[in-house]
Length: 259
Image (cartoon, rainbow, N blue to C red; front, top):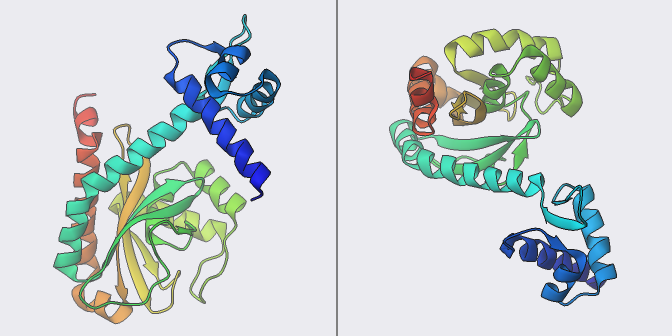
């Protein structure tokens, strides 16, 4: 990034902060006075921010306020912090009980993003790391999230994101994944049978918000032989209960019981 780009970004953030601190919408000149910029510069910045949805212009006046995109980012940030805080003790319990790798992920734009990771005592090499993205079609948590969607929504994600083959066991057919989803939906547990990484089996379950929307998931991953020895059904049942408990803490059960 060039020095000019950094300066433009810095000025744009100044404009956003000025709007966030104001009690009412501001005009171009007012914003310029607050951030020390010429109104022509402020106007250019506002045009770009408005185009991206970060600010909005009032219909009847040449005045601006923060846009819906800012609200969406704030809600997303809050949700991410909330789910991580709520899930943390349950992740620790899972890691302790099965002594395998435990992940917490969130759903973002048709992919999963690793939000937290806890290792067992027997460290294994995995590609996953906090902040890394992964596809849905070959991950247990991804398939668990897909199962919470309508077939149309799931199909759109699979088709638009593509289905890369990561191992010889990766399923690359949209129809094949869609056929899995009803069973996952019923059991609330999905299986990644060495589809993302050879030698690694993963079980995943969705995490739901108050509205019943799958905002993320929790998984247990380990070497195939150890996972089979510990019992996939046993791990899956505990995992399902953990997912439901986290969802309950996020408000899902309360709203459904009182609907």
